[in-house]
Amino acid sequence: MTVPFLDLNIQYQSIKPEIDKAIQNVIDHSAFILGKAVSEFEREFAAAHSVKHCIGVSSGTDANHLALWSLGVGPGDEVIIPANTFIATAWGATLCGAKPIFVDCEPDGYTIDATKVEQVITQKSKAIVPVHLYGQSADLDTLAEIANKNKLFLIEDAAQAHLAEYKGKMVGGLSEAASFSFYPGKNLGAFGEAGAVTMNNDQLAINLKMMREHGQSEKYHHEVLGHNYRMEGIQGAVLGVKLKYLKEWTEKRRTVAEKYKKLLGDVEQIVLPKEMPYAKHVYHLFVIRVKEKREKREERRNGLMRYLNENGVATGLHYPVPLHLQNCFKYLGYNKGDFPVSEELAELGLSLPMFPEMSDVQIEYVCDIITKFFMKQ
Ligand SMILES: *Cc1c(COP(=O)(O)O)cnc(C)c1O
Image 1 (cartoon, protein in one colour):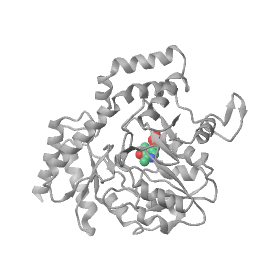
Image 2 (tube, protein in one colour):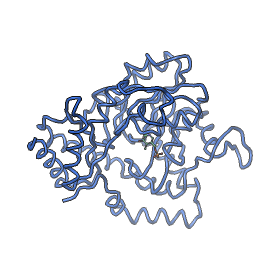
Image 3 (cartoon, rainbow, N blue to C red):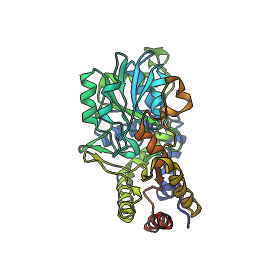
Image 4 (cartoon, rainbow, N blue to C red):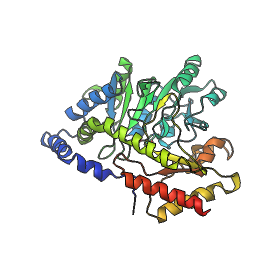
């Protein structure tokens, strides 16, 4: 038996006529850039997240950049981000000419450790960008308090967290601005590159809308600096169709997670993902952590990974190298040992297959292989 890490084709097949029709409609109207399909999707995505504005853009990475850029983050500024995230969170800062400052993640929810943020704040700090990692929100209230006290912007990287909740409220509208990604493998995925920035501030929305389209207020009248960060019409059309199913798919992800937790609950050698008391997790990823002593930890996790792969189960690593140890950030001067929780997660974390359409047989098979692996030891 083989179990893929995710299966985008099953999802497409389940709504094919609707998707095909929506794409054809964009082509028939030659509405290739922005247009009606995009603006309708923006309205619906904002409503789904109880936030006033949604601005569709060309990718989650571009959303990361635009959110910071539109708030005036620039050269000489520092932006505080978690060490354990996808690199694009850091590009938001570097594309503005700012310096990313890393903070370790906390050991239960794996999001930025709010208790360690204040010690890195300097005169140059401009923003904190927590990541709702793996689909679980960061501790936003605690972070907002720190941000307010120190006059910093709080910006959510919600690329992995569509429809996730914090204390019963939807993410995306709980800070100055939030960025989302619609990369095909995300919980809400386009048929290409796409992303969005959400916010409640009307003036910020006006600025951001200009900035994504060459800074123009009307054609060839450029009010502010900008770039081409527009969303394509076909992506808006696909996302508009898929958004209607997102709630149902999210519940299915949660059901898959519950089944995993039940079937793996007795495996003493692993730590299962923990849903924090303040969060409703949307399980973009289901990341387990192998328990192992320091000397042998990577070897043990890799052994489990190899065993799963040999038995037809695809796995992922999120992420094998924390940002402070990436070659591209050598100039920042961090060292191994600086962020022990992130480093441990990089060496011991393993992402299991996770997608809404995963069958019971597939889940049981994955858990069976994991159980067998540890019985052999
Ligand atoms: C996917 C992702 C991004 C970037 O999104 P793209 O659409 O691929 O550019 C940014 N931040 C995080 C945390 C992500 O997972």
